[in-house]
Image (cartoon, rainbow, N blue to C red; front, side):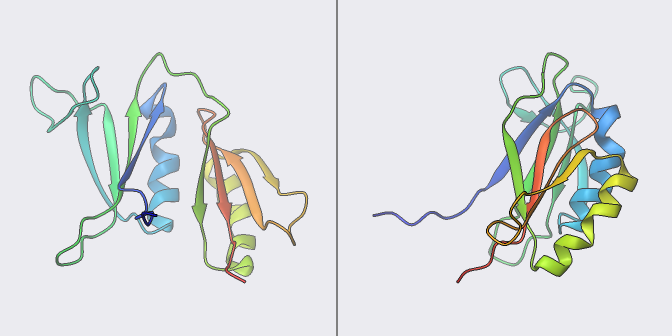
Length: 144
């Protein structure tokens, strides 16, 4: 059976980059995606450098690449037709104590509908939405 190698990247579509950019400028670096750059993603999903023919409509957040390794990244892509769905992106944090420290920051940064999991012993998680309604989560699951 093949081994799951993790995710290379996430393309997250939002109806307005301007509405969520300040939020992600705080959230994603705090999760370790400390580098940023603008790109253009066309209607087919092809990525381009920003130039006169390809205006910025995407902000990429990525981790520094280690020698011989690729950096994971998240692209926040403006798609004016995008409507929030019930799909949720979950980010792992190290410990339950670390998870507890996130709630006030998320509220300060403009997260909406910030809620703790109903059973924090079984599943320590904090659910929230970005300012455009994208569903997100921080969880502190640890191996037994």
